[in-house]
Image (spheres, rainbow, N blue to C red):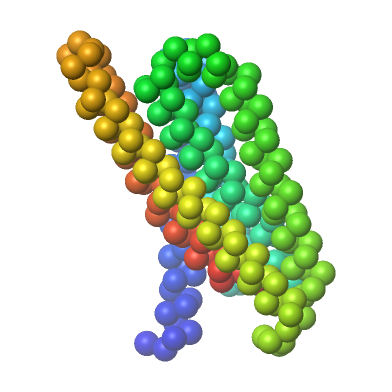
Length: 236
């Protein structure tokens, strides 16, 4: 099998994986919205879950469309590069919201009185809004710079080197946030274990379920991060 055939198969597989991810995120988004409306979920934490799900949904849809267009249509690279702004915003928003969810859960378990008195739903919404604004600024700045300095067939040009710098910086930030999230969840589990002597058996069991569920949520988020990072690296 030639290398071109392998690349073609990888592109097709990425489309199907993105469609599966899109369906899963839409299902999670529906469950979150219904649960919040029925007051079955914790609004403060699920604001971040909903925001992250929306960001992942946009990333799945955008990557599937862009990969499909590159595969079946002859579109200039700089036009496709300009559309990466949606992916950039989605990846940054999802990673920051995932990290914020870990931190707020740790605060809720380790310092419940501070969580109830200082962490309000309005402040959580403000944080989510700031996250999206920050991601939009980075995504738009990176895309405008990349389109304005686009020069094909000049691998050693300074603009291309600057674009690679943007990609490396973004990858470091995203991966740092995703590494920080599981680390925070590990601290949550340690905190739960230490509080076993102070709480009743039922309360500790509920806390363990919460910690394990969120830890699983963080672990299953890593493949999405890897796939999005690979997609961004190949979309110039």
